[in-house]
Structure formats: structure tokens, C-alpha cells
Image (cartoon, rainbow, N blue to C red):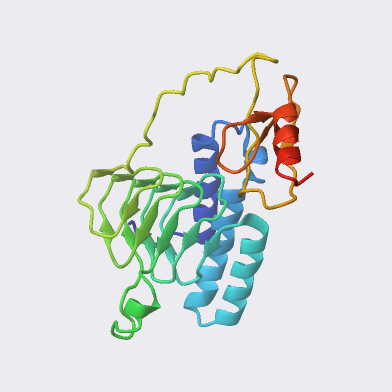
Length: 244
């Protein structure tokens, strides 16, 4: 990262990089409504207040920005120059994270900590979040956890999870989805092709008539585990057994 520049110059660079990297924008005026730009600008202000000890004001600005943009950046996080957050939705950047210059961050990226069960045992003031080098690209839903370092110009692909240091220029990709051939069409019997057995949940007790169903073909019935009977056969059996 380069040395700190004036706030107004940094804000102007943020605007220029949004126009340069988002092909859906056609002018600087249109870029003023970009969600990622609003989140970065709000963080520039809240971070300076945070560094001067005005933490309540810094957190208030961060909360308002989160509600309006869907991007959560802790005021203590450090963002370099020309950081571009595309789309912005659900991006999370933790307190001790450091993001270098010319970094591109897509939606749902998390630069987070491992968890309280590990962080509570770290020394006071120890880094809990990642350091991202210059020119890094973080794909949609990429997750980088813990005090790891991402080398300059590395690429973390969509859905990838990183918990170890990456050297400069590294490429990390998530496992690809498994593509399976579509199942063939199922044969559908023509209407009236034959009797369709009626499912039973248990054997019929005394005095319980058989279940019959009409599906366009002849009416059939099934009693217990026996083969399907026609209605006339079932009636005759019940009559002969005295259960009619």
C-alpha cells in the first residue's frame, strides 16, 4: 500500500475506479449511485473518525452505511486506494483487516475472523482478520478467515474458502459442480391399458370392505397381501364368509 493521501483525492480515485471497472455505468454522475462506492466512501469517513478516538460517531456512520448498502465494514479496517466493491451485497470486512490498493471485491465476500473460541485466546491487540495484498481479486462468496496474508495479485475464485497464507499471484478455486446427464423420459402407460392395483396400508379386518379405485380402466380391489380381485369376486368372497 502507498502512503496515505488526502481524503478528497482518495474519494475522487474511488469514483474513477468505479467508472473504469463497472461496464454497466456510462458516466461519473451515474456512478455516484453505485452501492459499492457509497459503502467505500462511508468507510473512508468512519475510519478517520475511528482513528481519532471518535468511535461512537464512526460506528454510527458504519451502521447507517450497512443499512443502506448491505456492506458491513468495521471502522477499524484499513482500505487502500482504488478499492472496488462490485454489487456490494453482504460484503463483510472485519476490524483488523487490511485491504491493499486496487483490490476488487465482489458480492458476499467475507474477510473475517476464525471465531471467538480462537480469538479470545489471542494476545490483546493481535490481528484477527486477513491482510489482502495489492491487486487481489476476491470472487463472489469468497471467504478468507483468520490472520492470513493474501499475496499481491492473487485471485480467490467464487465460493472458495481460504484459511492459510497465499503467495503472490496464487490462484484458488472452489470445487466445480458435478454435471450429470439428464434422466431419460419415463414411459407413461396409456389410459385404460389395464387394472391398476390399489395400495393398502394393512390387511382388512372383519367386516371391512375392500378398497376399490376407478382410473379409467376396470375397477379392481386388493385385500391384504393377496393379488387384486375384481369387484364381483370380492363380493362373492365376502358373502360366502358371512361378512356381508
